[in-house]
Structures are given as C-alpha cells and as structure tokens.
Length: 293
Image 1 (cartoon, rainbow, N blue to C red):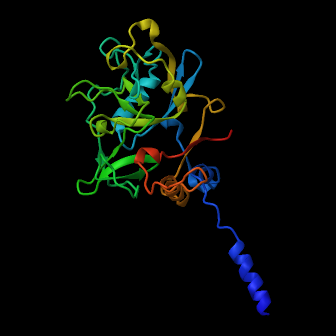
Image 2: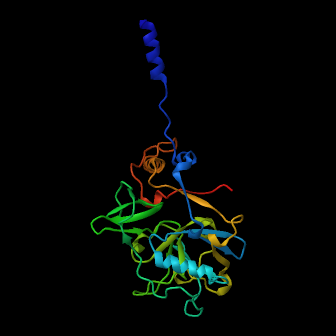
C-alpha cells in the first residue's frame, strides 16, 4: 500500500503544469457567446479606385451627431471621387473633399456639437486594471477602448491604432465628418477629448498604413497626382446582403475577453522571458473577426 501511494505521488509530481494560453489562442478558442455582431448600419465601406477595400466600424454611442452626418454623407455619395490626400508617417492617413467647394447632402448638420466625450451613464465599463497616462482610468465599453473619469462622470474614445477621427479647423469648429483620418502610428493620445472619434478600421488597415508617405508639411502629398482616388463609400446596409461584409467583435464584458486582457499583460508563452505585468490600453485592442458566410 505504501509503495502504491509513493508511486501515485511521483506521477502527480511529474505532471507538467498546464501551459498558459497566448492571447491569440484565447481568441481562436473563444465560444460563440463571446462575440457580438456589428450592425450593417455601423459599417462604413470605402472602396479605393485600385480595387482595395477598407471597412470602418462606426461608434454612434460616442458621437451620434457626427456618425449621423457620416451616414448621410455616405448615402449621398459625397465621397465618390474624393481622395486620400495626406499620409503622415507614424501619425495619420486622411481623406475627404473640400467642404467649402462641394455642397453637403441634405440632413448633414453643418456645425455638430463637440462630441469629444460622453456621459458614463448607460455604459457598462470593464476597467483595464492598469494606469493610463491620458485619463484617470482606462478600460473597455461596448467593444471600444475608452478613457474615463468617474468623478466627472465622462468617457471618451481613444486615439489608438486604427481609430478614426473627424478632421476639423480651430475651435469652435468641430468638423462635419466629411474629412476623416485613421491613426497609422504610435497612438497620439494627446488628441483624446480634442477631436471627435467616430470609429475604427476593422478590415484593410494594411491598405492605409502601407500607402506612400506625403513629403510636404504634416504629410500632405505634394501634387494631386499622388492622391489615392476613392471610388465610393457606402454603409454596409446599402450593400446587398449577399455581397455585404459581416463582422463580429469580442464582447468586452465576457469572461473570454477578461482572460484575453490578462494574457496580454502577463505573457508566459515560450518566447517571453519576463512577463510585463501590465498592458497599455492601445495594446489590448478588442478582437474583431469576419463572420463566416
């Protein structure tokens, strides 16, 4: 009997510890219940003239007037024939039309409010759990990366990689949504709460970040011949269902997402020698996947 107990102890001691999952493995193994569909009306599909496509998820819960403008601009084909005219290295890609020359479609609010933050009321927030340099607290709400202030009761979208903002002139101008930019470099979080952030690129980011850099001040292209033509911009809801791209984002209130963030902050897979023990908000991007047909 004693020998049998000793043998069992040896077997238990010899069993290797469970191998920690990587963030990618957690995402790949996420159950169906951890994903949420993105509404076709929240998809802005931009077709470049070279046949490439960029898809943006809109955030009406953070900038409702600007997003309503963007939807009206898309339905009015306002961006057809416009261009990408600015690509600033480690900063932004910007596109649109000259708002002073091309009339805005009916229904577009010419002077939207400054939707640079919103009330915390109605948001279900999962704290990041680590300090943030640009907000009293940082975390996730409804699938978005946010900064927030519990004392002020406000929350804002952040200028993380791939996030899309509205170009504007000096205050009090807030931009209509006709001029948009996407972050293609190190997160310029100093822009948070100074510009309306209206969404994020969820597909085709490489088609923006790999564009030739502009050589003029602020990354503007030197001549119009360098501009990247835009064939059309449509809402996902305007595209026939059979041809419409469909996407899902990971529910940021799910246990799977909590495990994902923990793994991002404590990498223990074979490559890592020392886990960081923390993670920057922009390095904990919310997973998005294309939905199977």
